[in-house]
Length: 414
Image 1 (cartoon, rainbow, N blue to C red):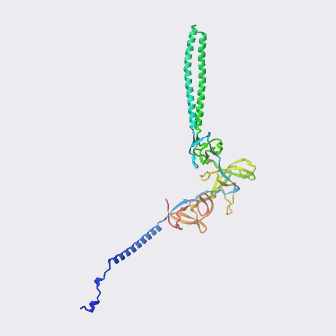
Image 2: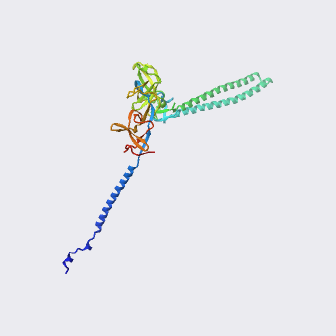
Image 3: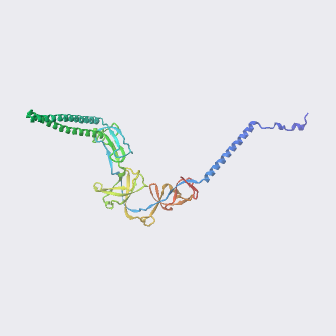
């Protein structure tokens, strides 16, 4: 019999962890280790990213001469080209090929369209055949003339020897003279046949429509299969034009000025033009000419204004407002008169940021950025005038602003 002490003693050999439980616990600890390791890696990457300098792109502050002048007169009008042509065919024919497309830039002499020339090719072949036939007849007459001249010389010899009669001599001489006249006539007929060939060839050439000058196609007025004619015909089913070509180098502004104020306008005076499509873009211009006639219905005089420099954004028939400027300089906002030669500063619009109602830029200096408040003037296209806060030649950040702070180290983007 076992003793009571031995009956209550625990069996230590029976205490063991089952394999399933052990595997479950080891998998849980492995998952915790993987999550912790991932957090450590992400934190390290974030710390490395924070320590790496930000990449920015900078642009230099540009200077320009001030041109603040007194506005003498305002007017509105449209952009119009001096050279604008509706290209038409010289003959009536069907369009077989159309090469002109809207927006296409054409060179002088470039083919815009081809017309059906089958009928004209037949006429050309017929004219060439007539020329060849007439030329062949001329050769036959020249052979006959050579024989007649030999016969005339023999008859003259016989007549001198009193073998042939005077009548035979006259007949031989008449035959030779007649052949000479026929040759002269045939030569004229050959020239006439050659002229007909030229006319027929011109008709064939007229089936090719070419650009009369360098320009841009702004309208395509005919399609393949349509009839075109230099005059209106066919009850409106015949096109009179093939395409409209505009010389983009000749575009200018045409405005109507009230005749009561036309005395203020002088050729060559400076003008500021603002397109309705780009209201923040002030385009320097000048008066080219004043049309020497008035419109009695509107009591206006046409004035043509040329741009100082052309731009692809300026398109024909755009609406435009112009301001005629005088020679007298205007007073600035601070009450100080602007002077000729005064430098004004411009920066790209991308460099300007709004900070609680204040306009600021980030100034780049020796690897660091400095937050700088600026005072702005008028906008001109993609540039912004800066009145105060910057100096000419300063470099300002134009891209890479995300998380940028005053005094932060940065690197220039190459």
